[in-house]
Amino acid sequence: MKIAWGMITKKEKLWVKVLREKYKIGEDGKDTFFWTDHWIPGINNLSALAVGPIPQEELRKKFVTIPLLKTIGIGACSISCSLRSMLQDGAQGSDSDMWKKLWRCPVPERVKFFLWTLSHDSVMTNNQRKRRSFCNSDICPICNNAIESALHAVRDCGHVKEYWLNLIPSNWKHDFFDMDLQDWIHSNISNKSEWNTRFALSVWSIWKQRNEIIFKNKARSLVSIKMMTDRYMEGITKAGLINSSNDLNPQPEKEFIRWNPPDENWSKMNVDGSCCPVLAEAWAVKIDLELARNSGVQNLVLEADSLIVINMIKNGVEIDHPLFPIIAGIRDMADKADWNVTFSHTLREGNRVANVLASLAHSCPIYMQVWSNPPCMCVNALQDDVRGA
Image (cartoon, rainbow, N blue to C red; front, side):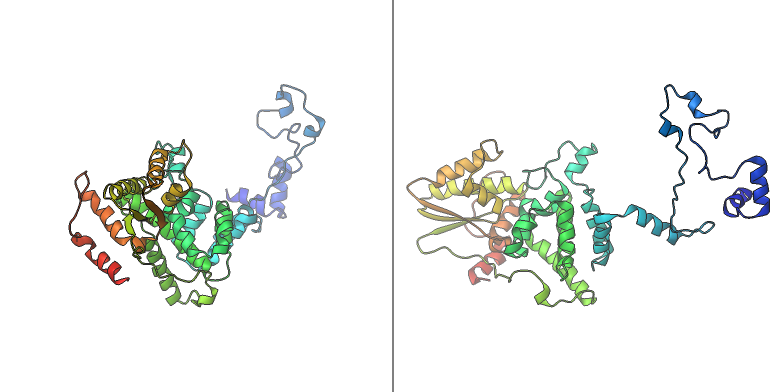
């Protein structure tokens, strides 16, 4: 092995030249004709084995030397040089630019790695799991309305989309939701302000909550996504990795969100669903609407924190939509001439009592439950609503 290495790396040595000339070995093959020269032991030449005529341009072809490590000199090898060479060959164009932007983003390494994996559509969504035969369905387990692709999981799923709509400026909305996965990540981490950090941490927090909903049966919550992101941001700011000046942050002005009482002579019902959020919330709207009508309510505001359900009720859905019977029933009931019904959307902070009751339903009997007095679990939230907090 030592002699062979010497013949490759010390071509000018006399002993190397003697061995090369005597035994006709040690050449790099660049002057060898692939088809007509004898270079395989036991075979005169490959052209004799060809089953058909070989084109003249093929007969003239020689072996081509392909350097595997371009930046390394002959006889010299190191781990750093090898990695540098592989990065130069393997990371080209937008892929390389994406990695550079991620590398400069002041977030924990696990967040960078997750975004890199996400940008290559390699996170374990149901779409990927079905492709690998890990499961039978590729439908999103949270909204049950669409295939759970990587982009759906972190941007387009119902409650996740609500989070982004409340975070980004209104003039961003069209472009933000219209980009494909790689462009979406690249565009947002390229932002010069602290937005690239908040964006990366938000995506990470959304993915973590997605896993907690699926694997730990936790309730979905826009507030918990924001709180998790804010904790990360606070730590990074304290570490001096970003400038926390608000003029660089493209977030819209913060709005004070609370439960608001209805106008005079109007009643208000707040609804929420748990388990399968969109389906459960649609059923909750229908049942509450029936309850209000049977109770003789004349003017009703029905409020929910699912923008998807509210939009489906206001705009209707196609006849082949899985929720068509429920939505159509809600719209027919609301259109009755003998009462007035309006539907409105609120954020989770303005729907806390309904959210607590929806979570409480998991431990209640499977029939309608009516309380004369508020359960102790929702007293604090109810008092906050009374105070307007």
